Image 1 (cartoon, helix red, strand yellow):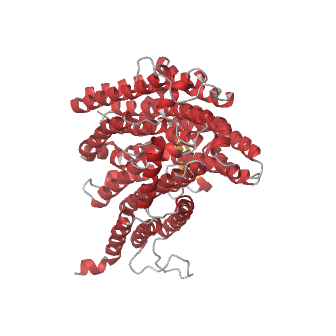
Image 2 (cartoon, each protein chain N blue to C red):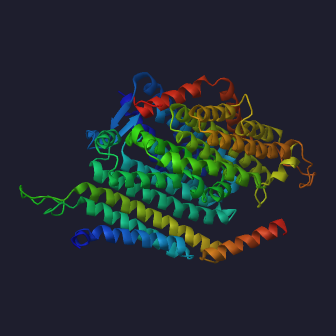
Image 3 (cartoon, rainbow over the protein chains, first blue to last red):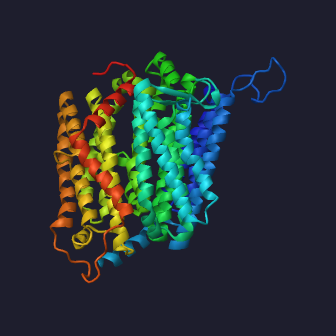
Length: 126
Length: 504
């Protein structure tokens, strides 16, 4: 029991990872896929920052106290970078979803696939 | 003194030129000229770097002067110097080629942004090749991938499926990159460092059964497999390459996946080490069967394609599976053959996609270039079709071409290892490859021409597109005759990658 209590960060990360991936795979709506991707990435951020925590460590900002124990700042920095990458990805993804909506009139992937098949049929005449 | 800073100049030249181009965004011709100049400069720098790496051994550059392993280090050795030269030369030629193609395929207000995204992609790919820090590799991988998604989307003005293709690539590529980051997290937890040589040392001291290391290994391979388009994870590639603007397809096909392949090889051998990678079962029991199945299945799918670019895209997936199979042969000969094929295939696919772009430009219709269209162009576009034919011969592995050499090397490596099933898979896939290559050549020169009205046949492609096309096509044949350069390059690259470890 104390194993789970002591590691609940990682368990939460696993749950978010699976939930995010499930949303990406199962949701037909393009916007929801991007949200799922975001949840998936957040799980990774949670994992990294949990790695950096040290027993008795405080936030890795200098307090002026020479005997202070700090948590590892490197995962925090890595995650800042990864968050920026995630935001850029989400921005590009949403921009693409907007364009798809403009040109197809739909944001559901099965409707888009149906429209593409109809265009194929008109081209090949089948 | 100047040589000292070349590694960072290699990456910064395209990355700084991109925002500079933004200042001239209302004058697309200046943007193109600036982009071409910076890509040509980057190609020159890559040449200098290759020369310096071959003469003096590994070049190490510390970003900001912070000492490794705390700071970010860039290490150029024979393996990535050759890749940098490949990426930047093909990038520069693709930019030269791009002007008429982009004028046709991308709408006027978007054109400057296309070149800017192209430069960002080029800079990102160079960064992936040059870096020796696993997290920095993720950052540059994402820089190149995000600009690749945008590059593909620029084709959406003509063909709205480009938006869907870019979106699908974005979803799958981001999942891949996130898996990679997860793997890096496990490795960081196990070793406490992000610098590749340092991590290799520390990993050597950790027992192989450590679950963090094995989890990291699994996640990193899966993540990079998505970027490489290894067999079951390849679904984004055909649409992405077909609907992208032709110049973008040239860069992505020739350099994009090859760079991710290099990243996989670098991490497998430069971080995990030969013993861990070849000692485990993952390569032999999972990756090799997937790659073998992928070769055959995607070659069969390529056989059934009637659109030229879709055929080339599926053929790319098959060739990538060849390379991965070469790596998973777990022998020095296999690795050398895989590197040789990376080099040769990049040149071949660059030539083929450039040719497809020339055809798309001159056919000037909204539907994609079908194989059946090639016959009608036989008389009016002989140069384009000739170059496509040469490159196709090399793709099919006809003797006396570069493609033959690398496929032969892969086959010999499989036979030496005694893996008969793999050798059989190589032969079957090459036979199927010969058939779809023959389809291209037959459609171009021997089939009856039916589809175009003959009164107004398209003219030959402009010279600015033909020159890079023929350079690449001739290179695809030339390196089959005078193979000393790529073969010795492959040998040196594997030496640098293995870094002195013993290999069977």
